[in-house]
Image (cartoon, rainbow, N blue to C red; front, side):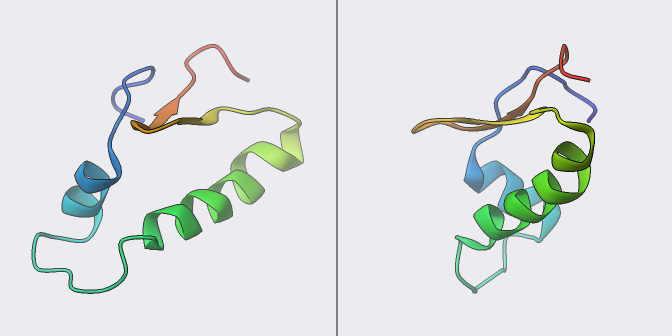
Length: 64
């Protein structure tokens, strides 16, 4: 939310949301992105949380 349009890698999200000592499955990021999309995008018919293939995720500053 602080940097709309900037692509954040899965590793960056893991470091900043959980922490460097997180030893679980790194796919947890994908699970939470999916949940966010259901709560933030789907009810309003938009696609503000975007996947940038092989890079990471970004918040589209023009969506919504």
